[in-house]
Length: 310
Image 1 (cartoon, rainbow, N blue to C red):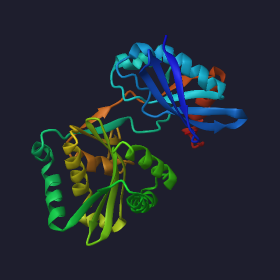
Image 2 (image 1 turned 90 degrees about the horizontal axis):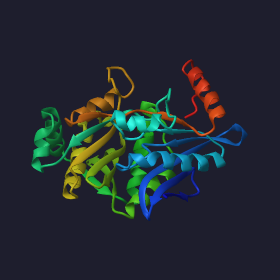
Image 3 (image 1 turned 180 degrees about the vertical axis):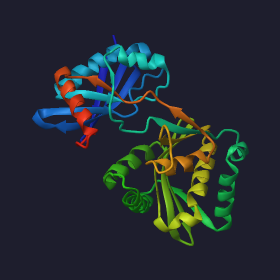
């Protein structure tokens, strides 16, 4: 019989493993947000992960639900990287309901970077031109996992967040991320400069056969130089040397339209000539059924301007 193993730290995140005969067959990293009365709202970003073992979900969910209930859990929100109706059914058969408010984009942008130089040929002509122009203009791109590089990137991120109006976590959060994946040689901070002036930056993760774009930022006055194209291409080249064959550029709007939030970065990502991959979306799994009804009702009113829970 599989057993639940828990790894908790000082943060509001706990990692749960469903272990069968010493081998993990399912996992979820669960965030916790406190609510009044000792209750909590839980979220498993891009989880659960079942690695093909869909039959393990009912048992895993029962054990996970019991554990979350002990800590005042009300609802577990999940948005796994699943794309099929069969995968969706695994959730709905255990009581999951579509959530009213997405937390992350329901779609990602995936680029084929296999084949060495063939990856460059697959890019749109405008993208290839912007890469070549960046080289001619003398833009340089450096990759580092040092804290000093993170300092430079964090300044860029704050400037970008102020301009584009999105939330930035504390520097300590990004430092923890860097420290965790640096031990495995899986993370790099890319910084693009022109004549020593910092223009753009990105945090990239190398995960198995996949390059993952986690965070990015640009200087407000760097638009004309278009440093992002060369920066991302250098990351792709490094990923190819590591054996990566795909590039997950992360979230894009499902129906991107001019003027819509997220349209700008959709256009940028689409110029790398990949494809949109649509996931099943965000679902609510009741931990405390009475509290779940209250929260879902409150989220319905949030559409009329009330604060959202997440």
